[in-house]
Length: 334
Image 1: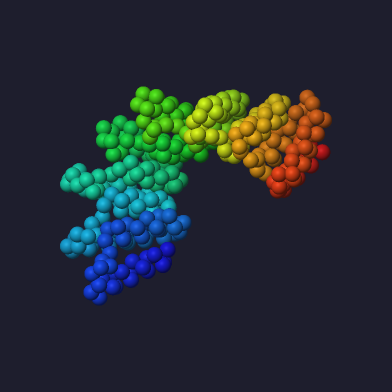
Image 2: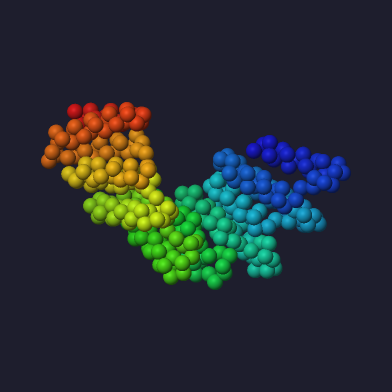
């Protein structure tokens, strides 16, 4: 990152020395701000973005029209504030954008769906107790808006959905909230046919995780399994957006293990077969989960042990590395 910003400084120096061909403009500064937002440097990303924006503001107010901040600049700053977990700065900038647009009607600074998604991401990264409500309020305002520029898309919905899923252990209303979001997506897509609203694998997998983390284990396994089967049906019906992946399979397997049903082993063996049909290669976590499910087959334990040992050999044949958890689970079975 220091190299990218150093290049910008070099451009400034060369321009100040008379080389007019390298004059930094809005794109130059916005590119560096965007790079900071994606740098992974949480400690300084927001600070550097804020400093660069202030520099642009100062130059623009001094008469340099070529560095006027636009919607892309502001959105990049919001993403940087999300990376630095700085909701206060983000809220102030988000409100500033709206005030500026309302006062001028300048299309260059009209908030977009990407702007709103960046603000939702700010709340997602904030960790604040009220973050899901704040993000949900933004999503609702987008959905209720008559402005096409800020109509929500699948990223908007999935981000808020994931916030509720992450809080399902502590928020009794999380599952209901998550289900409502998916229902809205399904309804909007059915009514309008607009791909922006179309649920996908991530939507269903996130809802599955929300149920998995909720307290109602028995209800959870039934709903998770149902969602998974709907997803596979969509995929095998020709919709590649619903192709299950490692996370989808692992989520449904964990649900069966958590419910401690004697059917868990049978179901996970079915899931392993389905993985092969779907072209998804098992990994260590999935095999571990399948072995643990087999350990719960108390009605036919000897056969379950044989199947678990076969899975252990399968790991070797498929060059899947066992880990400490694999050995612990097998030790408990033996």
